[in-house]
Amino acid sequence: MCGVCGEIRFDGASPDVEAVDAMTCAMHRRGPDGSGIFVRGPVALGHRRLKIIDLSERGAQPMIDPELGLAMVFNGCIYNYQELRNELQGLGYRFFSHADSEVILKAYHAWGSDCVQRFYGMFAFAIADTDTGTVILARDRLGIKPLYLAETPGRLRFASSLQSLLQAGDVDTSLDKVALHHYFSFHSVVPAPHTIYNGIRKLPPATVRIITPDGRSTERRYWTPNFEPDEARADWDEQRWQHELLDSLRTSVRRRMVADVPVGVLLSGGIDSSLVVALLAEQGQRDLATFSIGFDSAGGESGDEYAYSDLIADHFETDHHKIHIGTDRLLPAVPDTIAAMSEPMVSHDCVAFYLLSQEVSKSIKVVQSGQGADEILGGYDWYPPLAGVAREETTKAYASVFFDRSHEAIGQLLAAPYHLGDIDPSWEFAASHQSAPGARTAVDAALRLDTTIMLVDDPVKRVDTMTMAWGLEARVPFLDHEFVELAASCPPELKLAHGGKGVMKEASRKLLPAEVIDRTKGYFPVPGIRHLEGGVLDMVTDTLNSQAAKDRGLYRPEALERLFANPNGIRTTLGSNELWQVAMLEMWLQTMETITKR
Image 1 (cartoon, rainbow, N blue to C red):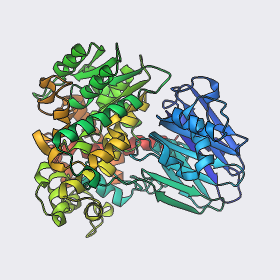
Image 2 (image 1 turned 90 degrees about the horizontal axis):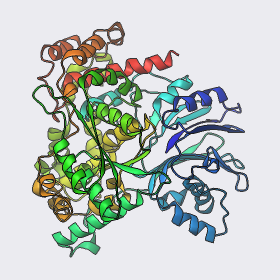
Image 3 (image 1 turned 45 degrees about the horizontal axis):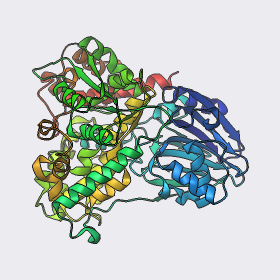
Image 4 (image 1 turned 180 degrees about the horizontal axis):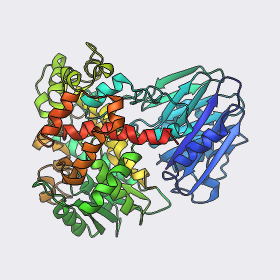
């Protein structure tokens, strides 16, 4: 787990080493344990290291193999690297380290860009062939690890964080109108390849990009889950599905214990993280470190779920750490949390994850987390209304329960220069995705969109960004690609049963207390932000009334007046505070501007 960056030149000039060094330095919190830069011909690579596997200097990056003529920077973890190492040794490859990064190098030499099909894990990497000048960029199937791109004539830069690209300079920071539309439609999600800035793009998940020395490139998607019944499983009954899904998750959790340092669990007290703890206990883990967070109550809303996390910690005798964050710590953390965001994220969970990660990183380097289960197994309340909806009506029904606001409402919010007129790119994006073959029902089509798009650029990005801000590696077993493939073929009615995630709830009854399984679904509670008051409300007000905001002119004045008149009463379809969503974007833009001015 690390930070990667680099520059590739196509115009005959040498790479800007100072820019690569600036990008590398900007990611020091992602990799506090070491750094390095490699320059050869038109390519420069930068790396910040967080030592998880092979703690020696033999595992340092950039990793160069002169014998094979390859250089690489890699962020992530390949959980099956030991098995692949043995296979590659059988093919005659010699290893100088015990790092999973070296396995990627050898695997690429042995199998070319198809090597990604053999990796079980999360990754974003760049490999430079120093003999041919070809560079390959790749990202894992579920987009757990990020990779941002800034391309100009004659040059391509890439980095694990958007801030790193800004730090290098020479980036077009004009606002992408399509991205703005997505942000206000999809609960702040901006699907790849877009970002808020016209000059920065994202390599999509499950994508390999091959770049030749003349600057030409090709992209291919190497994995797409199928959300249709599998004939081989046609005779499975409900009990068989429960057994198979639980066994697949058991394998996924075990894979994610691979490390040369201890691995803990972020324990919210919900069924997902509790199940991870249960499966690790089942596999013989003792004194497992678990961590929960809570906040002061506000607006009549409780700020913690300790009752459930304590129950699990006691039941499985974990080494439990209960972290309480008072209101006095919440407000100062908001600007730092925003500064850590590679893209603006509206969820109040961000502050919770940021503060939790800060505390957890003081005692451990790797944690498992329950993120992704709701998208994979149908746990959200917008899925049941889609049951029985005609396949061709999917997007209409989905938009009514998921979209934050309509195209017309976006037009009433954004000032004219930032609106697209009659063009509704968010509807078109969702409709195109949900009408494609490979999903049998409306529920399946919605789950596919959420699994491969919305999940990537909301909870997954949130967890990576906030944990890595403190040099903490988060692993997400519900996003093991084999588990996702299996769950995708599960009949939707089994997933929607019992209020959502029914098939997994029933499978968990032999492992978890009923109080956790049958509880009302909870969220990371941060009432001090969900309910805007005091210092947080002052921060929002000051931001939107600042000269920078007025000069940008992003919002219609009458729209802001409406929100300020009722700062906690106007909510999006998914229950988010509209004023917070509007302010978050402006706060993030102003924060990023401080980077570009350095």
